[in-house]
Length: 352
Ligand SMILES: O=C(O)CCC(=O)C(=O)O
Ligand SMILES: [Fe+2]
Image 1: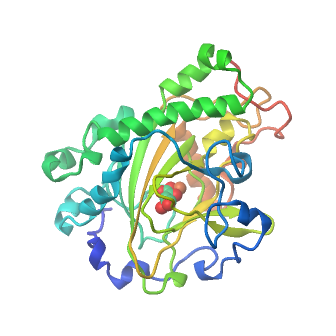
Image 2: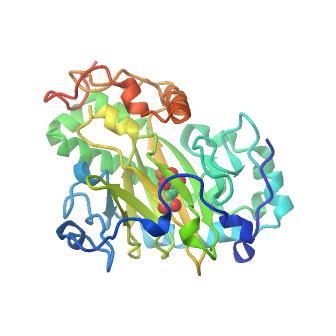
């Protein structure tokens, strides 16, 4: 299916925010900001996840957190939003020519894997890491007009984010009870860190005159290990808190990255760290840009769950297949992979 031509960010058509098709209307989300938990967060009048890997709310609880002091130089992040805006402002025919075609991993268009309302999110999807060489020649030819973010080497942003991914993995390993020596000597840990594969999406959510009747990105969990989200200073990302269910808006403090844990990380840690159910809403007055940088295992390696396996091992592509099936039947992909109760023996997988 050819990707539709896209509007420029400043002239998003009304049709860009037609009525949402799934889930609770954004405007009727449960009230936020009233509870003790909410006040613990950093988000003005809204409830919010705590900042940093170690402080405030725990990632086990939220499946996500704000990361500050991450060491990614401001200059690497500074240009991202501007580059993305430039890309979306390219003439529609140029964007259409760079459209993602069936079977291609990168290009301009809608996210393929999520069964989304097909009318709001416009994205360019450029796999990084091992797949970087497969950036379509159509994009490569337009190199001079394509922002550095999308170039083959990925630019400073890609290098910094990939390195941060490795550092954060070590923080997670430590949180799971591994000592510094075990982490340094651990073959499994080393392999996971060294082979991390990155994929990036660029999302534009055009402003919408009736935001309460539209949805930017339907509620979902990410599939990989974890995602770094750079977002424009326009809040729109929301996390689901359970019991009773309520949507909590993640604030966009300058320089902070949102870390969202994915399903394969839940599987890898045998359920000790949980993926976050999240979505993106649209705004009446302002466009919003987000750049999720997804990190996960190399495509061919099966992700082994912990000692007493709660899940069966899968590759990332196999997982995407299970997820497709789950979406069609409204089931949970992780539940489909569960082979036993998550027990006390969860943790990092066996070394082998
Ligand atoms: O726009 C956002 O903040 C969220 C993006 C996201 O969840 C995704 O692309 O998977
Ligand atoms: Fe996501």
